[in-house]
Amino acid sequence: MMALKHGLLVLFKVSACLALIYVIFLAVIFFALSPNHDIFKKEKFDKALWLQAIEAGNVNNKLDCQRGRMAQDVIDNVLSKKLSKNDIISILGEPNTSNNMQFDYELGWCSYIDSNSLHIEFDENSFLKAYILNH
Image (cartoon, rainbow, N blue to C red):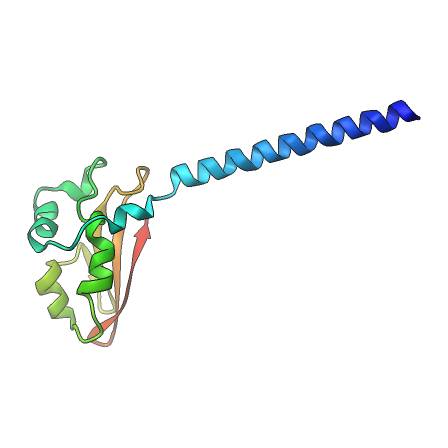
């Protein structure tokens, strides 16, 4: 009976260790594959660089995230509730995709496994909110 209890205790300890290793492994994978959100806070918005990225085709280059490094500054300091769709186009250029209620600007391959975009939503004709999307 004592041997059985000891065996169960050892099995429990081994199972707990394996579960902990599994959780740590999943956390490492999650953080490795999720976008590096600090990358979006690296640079101030520069209109010339923003427009240059799309002209050079860099938003499709898996190694580049030029627009992505400026994205958070665009959200925090460039976009405001008083801007119209035309105002935003004059600042950021034509969106990569759009409809009546939203614009999407490709940011590049900032998460290393897929591309990201700056998603801008409108209420009627004025800016409502913006955020970064992973594709």
